[in-house]
Image (cartoon, rainbow, N blue to C red; front, side):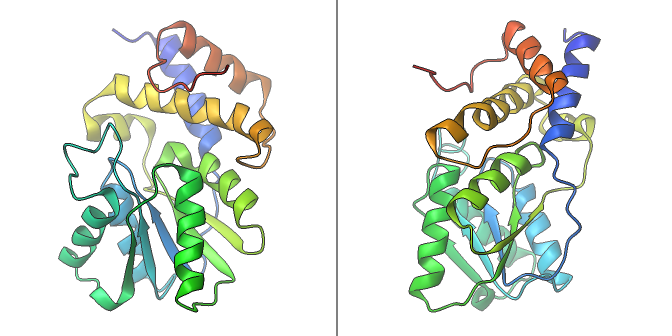
Length: 217
């Protein structure tokens, strides 16, 4: 049973990860691979709204997706987009990336290799990883404008959609840890983290939501 205090802490992390960017037209939409096909769905929705003329889906597999997405996250996203009516000519696939940094670097290399000029990117992620993805892209792709996007839903709705509260809270904690430690490693730009967010993160760690934490030594 998850306490109200723990849910409140999770909500603070959820809210902090949201960049609250207003969608606007970009050169390309980049869907970051994960277990969540909702990333593909919202990327398609934004494409239909004319936010970008080209989609890149990026991602190999992880311990979370190797069974449910055996062909790779990006390929499963592509299949989803095709099923939803996006023409194959509007989709590129980057199938090798295994972390957010590689998502950005490999996508950038793919577009450069194809001679595609990019001045702005709509970066589509899971709702609880907007800030992590944004900070990584700003570090690794500093010469383009980054607009963050994700499925517009509440924490409660997201938990219900996956029917796995522990997974969601573990992922929230993992995303927050990376925002805290990765700038020192040069993996992303530093973000200002309010004390109440850090306190929420520490509470969730103390409650055992730690399966997605990276070793710190």
